[in-house]
Length: 524
Image (cartoon, rainbow, N blue to C red):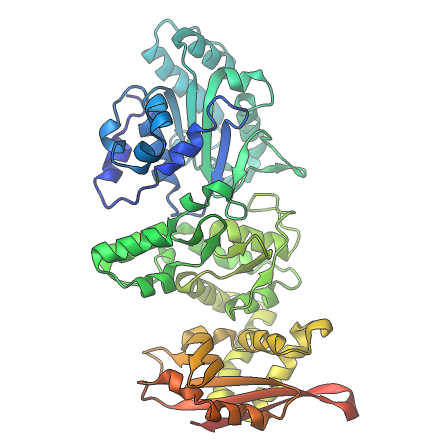
């Protein structure tokens, strides 16, 4: 058993000794690529989304120096894909590179030379008759010819040098190209390769710098979607077995809705909440959380407005195509938002091309970071939103109407101005700092209909509940009347605190050729 060559199955055995969510179906996807043109796979995921667990599972499954049957016989891979399961289990020499650990031992600039030297040393120890060569690729070819057995390459945190020391990326990518280039060399050496990291493969111009890899990311996960995190069924099972509140788990850690998987949860946070039975932001424990303020502080037109929309619960369109797949090359707000998708701060909907803040855990980090950003436009937006909440609870209806009109004019394209859905988005944007005090519900079943928007105070908040009804081209009195007639406050049955009824309308003022926003606020 080596460190880089055939590391054995101890890592996965330790994982199996704890509460384990079966993700062994991933093995079947990799098996399907063995000795095909699709043999190179790169899967990118945010921190704490189980990347290293997957890498250790693959090591245990493929490593020919151990027998891992006891670790896998009761898992999905053994039942659903029994043919390939037995064909490939413990049949390969595995080269395993944990790049973050190697960087700590070797230093970033010595990384390629260190990897070549250490892997070659372990190959010689395992196969004393091996002919080595200055070319690392040639040494690996010689090993395959000697043993009659190709390698499985597993690289964990492959992008760490690019994230942490951007100046080395040319040297590092050149090293990877020598192994994974468009020629017969790769096919002679590797039965398959699996790389995992936070970022997709670095772009060289507009193309991937290592072009033969099939890439699966949080933007386009395809068949790997159900292995991006925990699925809703898996979280339900965990909550059922450990007697945890599933609804709270969903509120705090859900939100990454991926094609082919549905809802996907942050695995690290779910497991910590399962063990501790405490629901709060475990994201603060990651190094990624410390970097958020730096990204949202970047001076790009429209970025502050986009962040305010996201915090208000409004989905924001993102063009992900121009992102260079590193942490330093930003041309516009789309690049910043795309990075936040890869880091897990935003969830992305492939069908709509829009992003949103996924859950309460991440929203707390956004809110905290936004308050620390020292930009005039950001500070202004926060102050305006907090002032709007103050004016609402103090029933200053004219001030509320004035601020809603300002946001509506600034943020809504004229083409979409005249509909109730546009006003709904404006309300969410205007009240974007509500998370300090409230939970927000839209189209809440209430009485004889559905309340447009309800802001329900958190347990720690002394503020009143807000029941908001929206109208377009109708008198604002009609909004208040509808709230009363259809008994919308009934949605808050059992709540004994104060309730405010808020009617907001905008009508076309023909005499001034503009729209006039009005507001009425009454006690329930």
